[in-house]
Image (cartoon, rainbow, N blue to C red; front, side, top):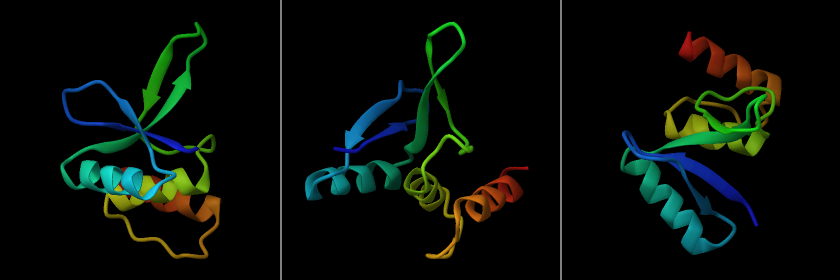
Amino acid sequence: MTDVWVQRPGEEPFSINDSGEMGKNTLSDALKNGAKVVNKEKDDAGSVRFETVPDNDWSVKEIRKWMAGEKIKYGARDKKAELLEKVKSTTS
């Protein structure tokens, strides 16, 4: 079971389980309609916050999904460090 957190502009983040075909279609539709992949984290006080730019805590799969949503090109064999470098160069 894989939950991907997404957020539409002006709305609260929500999760989509993309482990099945229906979930993958739902995620794809959400991204096409302006939703962005966000990362659910806990801050120092224990509150939940959402980070919208990938960092080292994100998995390679999450980074690639975020990059696809942002229409950032990446190679199938790119390592995590290479993906994060591409993210950094496009968001700076």
